[in-house]
Amino acid sequence: MATVTLTDGRNGKSYEFDILSPSVGPDVVDIRSFYQQTGMFTYDPGFTSTASCSSDITYINGEKGELRYRGYNIKDLATKRSYLDTCNLLLVGHLPSRTELTAFDLEIRKRSFVHEGLKNLFYSFPDNAHPMAMMSSAVSALSAFHYEHLNITTDTQYQVMARRILAKIPTLAALSYRRSLGIPFIYPDIERSFIENFLYMMRAYPSADTVIKDVEIKALDTIFTLHAEHEQNASTSTVRGVASTGAHPYAAMSAGINALWGRAHGGANESVIAQLEMIGSVDKVDEFIKKAKDANDDFRLMGFGHRVYKNFDPRAKILKQLLDELKDDLGINSELLEVAKKIEEVALTDEYFIERKLYPNIDFYSGLILTALKIPKSLFTIIFVIGRSVGWITQWIELKHDKEMKIARPRQRYTGPVNKKL
Image 1: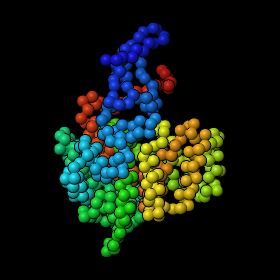
Image 2: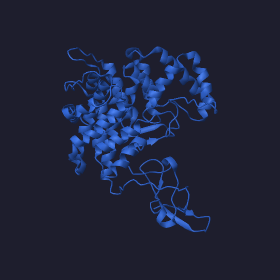
Image 3: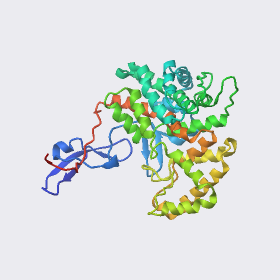
Image 4: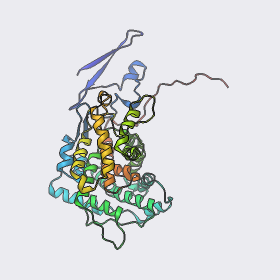
């Protein structure tokens, strides 16, 4: 096995650590014995160079702009298969046959109903409560209705638990939305597909016909697929951290929802639309580009750059193409679209953005599509939750299978006072 040797410049002592090779991507230095050998900790704020686990779910190459779920290129999955195909792939490890997909789809439809008692939770919130606050609370409360999932140990139990939460998340999302408007709740319609049923529960009114277009289903299906998984991001790491304590899986997912709510994470596409609306017209784009480039100005251009991708976000490429294909059928707001196009044009040609590798990311395009689907900004992060729920629960299952799993417990570099006296 290859090793790396580190030498302490203070005393000349050398320490040897194994190099572990992945199936693809950078090698990793196994520093689990670092403290034991050296009496020191490593220091890596934000975990920019630290692998916290081994995983066979998702692979990202940020330099090449590459994303794969279980080996499959994200473009192929998003353009040739459905979100439920992708869910099955993540949960089970392979793409389903037609028969398997039919059975999976039927199971998800049947599990989409929530306990009547859970609905009472929503009535305790004020009418103007943010849907994400209600969503987080509802998923956490769901652990009380399915407490038996706390001590599951078999693959069959894992799959029942995972499919249950996957099916109920859209229902809880629709309930959160409708409660925020103070309008009647709508039950799931198991005659409708996963995506269609979610849009139906959001839009329908009793005794009224609800028409949902195929083009709307396609657009939202693509967005869910692109959001389904994304390696060890902030919310996924939060789910894994909570899961490592032995907490209920739905409590871990609730924690992930709270992490996703942050504007630097899942709330970014909401900020993109708000910013496009603030800019207002193409004539003002140059003014705001100038502000974005001014080091002394607090203004930040939303929807550009990514922590991992140092090339074009592959998900953004797919959504940009989808946006071009569906803009007329979806009725994309032409004014917002023109502002977005102008910003995109400047960012892709201006040396300031090119040098800093600030390419448009998925949030830059997803907000425009969600707006066209008549989904309000307050619900944008909820859409992210629905798509990512399968990734979170797949990561939870993988952690439970990991023989090397320990409770998450980072160390710190203490910089406070020492030996103060009373």
